[in-house]
Length: 601
Image (tube, rainbow, N blue to C red; front, side, top):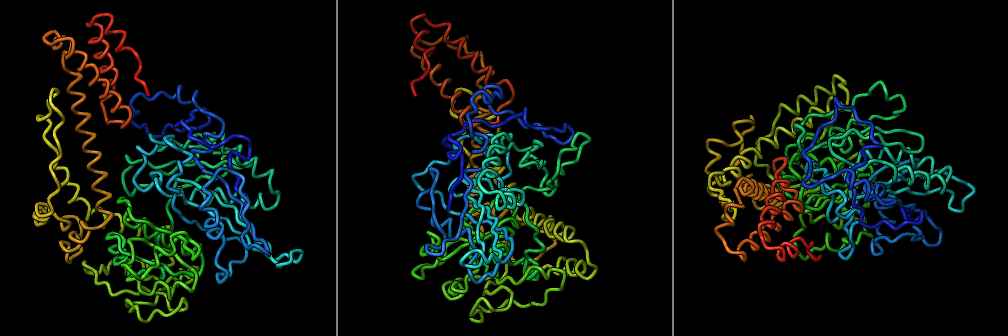
């Protein structure tokens, strides 16, 4: 396996520090969204700080080429500073299992853990982009994605009789649709022209603007131009901000309507009678395994499961394609403890036996027959799952909390009968999942908002007030009058579903995120209140020691606001800096010299 990254061109990929490149972007004002600026952000200084391969590292960690050696199997040749202990896993994850029989070109993705002693090549480079991104598109902190283009074709000139090779893009970004599109351009060219072609692609990527939510990005690659828009957390959920073709776009070859969404209906078609139950299992963070005939169907189905609870972020681990060579194989298949909260996608028949103790198993058939009506109706018993040759279906003893929604099933069935376009079926199913998730999460949002202290309780000369703790009993009481029944037609044991959800990793991740946002809002309100005070008049009543203490505390506040990117009103930080300077100027010259010195790192 040859690992190709920026080191290949002579520069190491280390901590890049830029966030944007306006010069290289073709922006359509009608489509672009203006995002609130980060505290102290300065586009010009960011551009000046750019180093070679910073832009490349904003999108990719590295590019890998995985080949097959007759004597060694997947051969490893390391050419860049990379995750040494993961390289063997990457080799096996980049090839389909031998039983998959993937002739021709196959695309899929996998996901693996970042080494504990390894820094991300992107570092703090994309912090503002993360701030503006929706939850499902934030960078993976502890994992990498691998996007694979695998080619297997007959070649009598080779001893094995087949040409087998994968081109793999390793990234922290979950832009599945975008990277698959990118590989469709890069891989065929690489397989024909080899190394020089890949080097040219790396240089093209290093001239791209960095991935900035809300902006229209025009990305040239190997003679093709891709135009995309990365969604923001300010977009209305369920709406698609389509990138329109403008008159000046004669050079644009591909306009992507989405960078990350998979076709839900195609993925769930073999089991769409059970979509509501699958939504519950994913919501509750249950252990799920998807058994599929190929890595493409395995990875697409796992990604569809993870996205079905959007805009809620799935907070447990998930592996779109998992093999027996994965470094977590023993951890996830042990019988000495209950299966972990994880979704695994597998293709090897060995897993039918190894994972038969798992509580929920989804068997996916061939997705190419999505134009036919699915025939399976009943949930199957786990004991009936013997091998990967078992019929498609859901094997579980789980009893859903909510009554089955027959309307969505009839709507999708009617669409199949009337040969409704796949895109329309996908839109119907995506809207259904969105409304179901929103109906579930709105009561939680409403209750958590009530934990916020009143603004009048914020005093500039006292510490910011604390959020009230989350009380499960108090929340349950609110459901009687303000529960999901206000927005959802579904009946069932909503209370039981909430009780189970409050114990899940998804609730823990969601509440941590909301608590952080609200705490930062309190800090911002406190800082704004402080900036409205007449500090010069106040220090006249205090000693020099107290004035110096005030300056130090204000500087700490300024540093915190910049580091955490607090949601402040425009001009707040400038006002705070002027307050600090005014207080310093009122002190003796010797103290002024000391306080003007930059802090030691």
